[in-house]
Image (cartoon, rainbow, N blue to C red):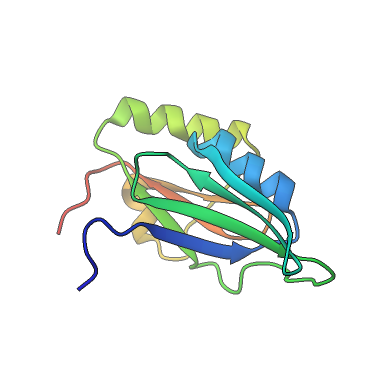
Length: 132
C-alpha cells in the first residue's frame, strides 16, 4: 500500500510550457514549486501548493511535438464544499484563459463546470464535496 505520506505528481507533456504553467497558476491559484531546463532534453515546471500532497508537472521535450489531449475525458477534478469559493475559482479559470466547455460525460455538468486548457486537457470544478 502506498503510504499517506507519499506525494502524487501528475505529469504530462505540452507544446506550450510557459503558457500552460501560467494558466494553471492563475486559474487554480497554484505556485511554481520548481522548474528545469535542458534536463536530458526536457524543460519543465512543477506547480502546486507546498503543503499539499499532490502537484502537477508539465514538460516539453525539446524538438518534439505532442499535440492535444487524446480525448475529451482526460480530467482533473477538484471538489469544493464552499459554493462561494467555487464561484470565485470558476471566475479565475476564465480570467486565466481556460475555455468553458460542456463535459464529455454530462454528469460533471450537473453540479460543476468544465474548463479546457490550450492543450485540450480539461479541469472540472465540482460544486459539491467529494463523497465515497
